Every structure is written in C-alpha cells, then in structure tokens.
Length: 70
Image (cartoon, rainbow, N blue to C red):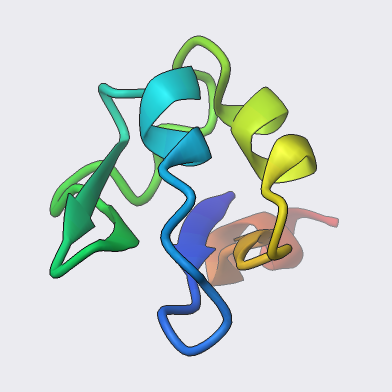
C-alpha cells in the first residue's frame, strides 16, 4: 500500500501530523507525507489519520506488486 496526500484537497488542519507524526508533516501549512514514508501504512495511527482527515485528502492505494499477487 502507498500513502498519498492531495495538497489541492488538504486545508491544513494538521490532524494527520498529530495522529501519525512519523509519517506526516506540514509544508507551507498543508499536510504532506514525509519523503521515504510513503509505504509506512503499518506505522502507528496511519489508518486513523486517513479515516479522520477532515478534508479526505489522504488515500491508501495498492502498489503494482500487490496487484500482481492478487
């Protein structure tokens, strides 16, 4: 799985950073995934951050290798 955050949809509540600071940060007031942490789906509270994002800007998507296994 890959974590992505749409900066066009984010309005900068910072909720993701508070829930999963090892994966998310803020850049210019908007949420962002820390470089290199795009696949840290199992990090504590990532799924909570995705589900709790007030702007629904965070998504989890399957990677090509995961799709090939199905």
